[in-house]
Structures are given as structure tokens and as C-alpha cells.
Length: 611
Image (cartoon, rainbow, N blue to C red; front, top):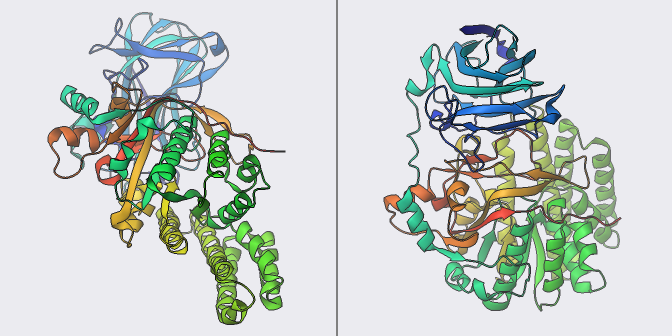
């Protein structure tokens, strides 16, 4: 028996987001199984009142089907039980998308099984069209039925092509689902030509090579434990800038392991500048407080570090660093307008009445109109004029202050100009005013790279450690923004620091992390999505050690090397973890990093704030 439903999608609603997946990873027959006996590439967007697993007893075809069973929480509730984004960017204009699936009722009546086809919007998740039917006495228990839904699309209306599909069950039900298929203009998706070649998935030989290539690490929070880190002398070599990444901002084990590595690099390899993905101005203030010695580590971390670094692990690191001679804290980001303005007002008041009054006027203007794109444009031009006035007055000011303070004054002025312009680009992208998101992303990463070069010059060629997200420290563009995002690491390679730069990614397979919502000072705990068969973390999680370092191979690569180091996906999460958004994205590990630190299972960071 076949049920049909027709869905009409108006063209103005269908503005879709490039997700980057190919149909190779669809898994509509549920034959590929992930870590938790759930079908790969399918996951729940939030905790749902249903148990979902692969069922080998009642498959429609193949070895498995998906079985959905209500739990006690499912009474008078509904839940999205499967959820996936499908990339359609490889195809030309098309008129309709058809989805078919088979279902088998094991138990339950008077409920709905809802199917939806939905455009993907990175800003908010919204189901705009659904197809559903009532499961009642006309459907026999134990029999398989076919269901079909069609979405009509206006040719040429899709600017960025991806759709999200899913199944929503309501109330009490026990049901099997199998063989979901997608047709584009009545042609099966899997039969259509694709732009991207099928992935070469790792096999037992790849895993054997991996297990012989990794170095086991201790799972310890003792920052003085460094015997297992001796390999760093060879891995780091003569690098003058070492970037330590993270796939999530709010992960305790990443913070602890990076702190141990920093301790080792400071004590054994002469690194002295510890630079965080935080504002260059506020981290200079934090360093001043650290050197002053009258402020606790918790006070410094609480007041001047961004929320993603406001953790007990970072505080423990600062406790260690404050005992080291010649070690300084630094930042290399330019996102906040507040701190440069605050510092400039404090420093300029005794030096120049004209510059001080102009800075106060800009501060008042920012306070009133910061959220307006047009006003941000005016702020930017005001800040540029203020910088020019400072540069003109600089020779006269030099007599009243030292070269170090003068250098920081100029840097704060430039940071103010940069942060206002970055805010302007962010506002333009949010207001859909024709500025692509990669423009602001590229600008931010270019500022980061420029700040690292400035720190290197200011601190007279001291060795620098960067504490930063994996995304920023990559050496080559990936699939983000259609390959148009240029990363901080890529910008650094074009500078004199290029040959002296090394980047190390940090990855995990399972666990939880802190999600820092803007309206929740305390942060939320988010469960990390389990990796699937086309993810690096899926294979790294099966390695013989739970915590290890993997030196990525250099030079000519064999097939074995390529399968495990290129063409797969990796987890990449920012400070806010959005329920339902896929956490994995295409990545080229080999060309972007010198090595990988992997921790199989992780826990949330110890986030805090002082009252």
C-alpha cells in the first residue's frame, strides 16, 4: 500500500545552505552502524522521548532497519527521531524532490508519523513544510507500507542547495522504518552524477598504520607531569610559533592537555608568550595584572578572558605561569570595541585633551548606536580619523611616555579601528545586505595573523604558543563558505613566520562540552554528536590508546596515509552548540596540521564566573 502527499514550496522560502555532503553518506537503508548501534549520519537534534536503534530482526531489505520505540516520556509528546542534511549542490536546476520510505507498525494506534522536507538555514532551524498521516486501524501490525512525499521547487530559485530531512513520531508507537530514498525529478539520487568522487574509507591496513604511528599520553590533570611529552622536541622542532587547537571551545580535557604541553614548552623549549584567542588589548591588561602580582589567577581569568577561557583549567594554568620568569600572557583577536576604548580613555586623559575628548565622544556614540549597520560605518570612519590624529600627534606624545607604552597606544587605536570594521561586516552579513559570511571570517583571521606577527616583533622574537580553535590554525582552506574562507594559519604561512609555524589539532570522539549561549551566563552542557563512518574521529576512536599524539606524515604519501588523513569529516564547534545542527564538516587533515592530539572521551570544561 502506498500513501502519497504533495508539498508545494514557494520559491521565496527556499533559500538553502551548502552543507557539503554527498549522497555517498546518505545511509537511507540504515546498513551502516555508528558507535551507539544507531544508523550513521542520523541523529536526534535534542533529547527525544524515543529509543532509536538499528533492528536486524525486522528489516524491510538488507540486514537492518531503524526501529523507533516510545519511552514513558513519549506520552502526549512528539520527538524528531531521525534527522539529516542532504547536499544537492552537485546538481543543476531541478523541479521536484521526492522522498520515499517504508514503515512497519509493531504496536500503537491513533498517532502520527510525520515526514518533513526542510531548507537548511544556519541562523535558525524551522520546519516550513511537512507531510504526515494518521496511523490507525487501517494499517495492520506486522505489514510493510510505502510512503511518499514530493516537494515542488521553482527552477533557479535555489541559491545554495541542501535540504534537511527527518521523521517525527508522535505519542505511543513502536515502528520500523527502512529504505528511505530521494529522487530528483523522478531520478534516484544515488544514480545521478556527482561532482565529488566517492570517499576512500580507511580499512584494517590504515588502522594498523595508525596504531604504529601514535604516541600514548597520560590522562592526568597534573600539569607538572611531563615525562610523556618528550616527543614534542622532535614534533615542534625549530618552530617559533606553535598553535594548539580545539574542536570544541568548552572541553575540559583539551584545556588540561594543552596546559601540560604549554608547561613543557615553557620549561624545555624556551617558549615565553602564551597567546589566547582573545582580544589583544584585554589580554595585555591581563598580563599587566599578572605581572603586578596582587590579583589572583581566578580574578584575572574572570575579568579579562572571554567566556570560553573562563574555566578552572585555564585558572590552574595561570597559577603555573605566574611562577615562571619572563612568561607573558597575550591575545591575538580583534572583536571587542569596549576594551580598546576603555584603555585609550585611561591612557590619553593625562597625555592629550584633544585625543581624550575625541575618544570619549566616540565611546558615547558607540554606546548609543552600536547595533546599527549604518552607524557602525560612521563609527569606523570616526575611529579612522582618530587614528590619523594620534599618528600626527605621536612625535609630541613620545616625550611624555616611553616607547613600550607608545607602541601599545598605537596598537590599541588600530585594534579599535579593526574591531569596529569587523562588527560592521558582521552586521552586514546578519542583515543580509549582500556581504557573504566568509568576508567577515577572512577579515577576522587576517587580523589574527597580523596580531601574531606584531606580538613576535614587539616581544623581540620570543617564541609564541597560540591557544585557539582548530578552524583558525589551519594552513589551507577547506569546504567552509565554498572554499573561500582563508584561515589565520594560511595568512601566517604568507609572512616571514611561515616556515617557523606549526599547528596541532585537538579532537575527541565522544563526550560533552559547554555551550556558551549569549543569554546564559552559566553555559549549558551539550552532548557531542557521535562520529560516523566518514569522520576522522570514528577511526581515531578505535585506536589502541585512549589518549595519544599522532604525528601527521610529511612528504610523499601512500594510499594508506591518504585514506586516514584526507577526504573525511571532522567535528568543528564554536562557542554555541546548536541542537540539531550537524557537528561534522569536510576537512583535509594532512595539509592543514602537523599533528593531532586525540582524546577518546571528554567532559565539559569547568566554567565559572566570580560574583
